[in-house]
Length: 116
Image (cartoon, rainbow, N blue to C red; front, top):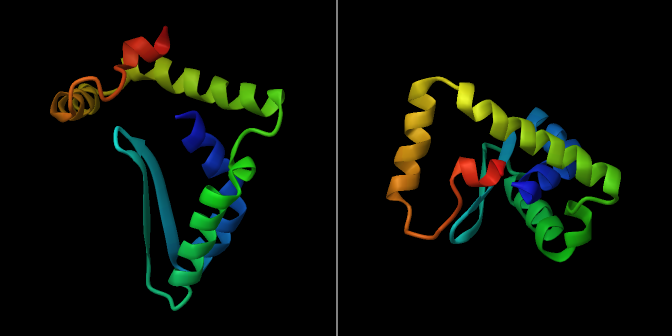
């Protein structure tokens, strides 16, 4: 969660420019590792894909929090998201728990464990 938040924040400038050109990317962490998704209809999709993966793989310091203030900001955002989970709509909570039930045992943490 922290890596996703930090990487999205650091790639925001580039992602905005790409979105104006009709390109998009998604980054998520799963029990098997990092999942990247790219989409859009443009001849620049390959260049955009290469740029994002290059930043995430070879320039790891670019995507990590640069100082304690930034780290604390990300942690505060994550903490708030976890606390808001309890007041989300029941169907959203059921989708979350259905996904957790389908995941392999020991592949992650449930929301209450992350809140602690």
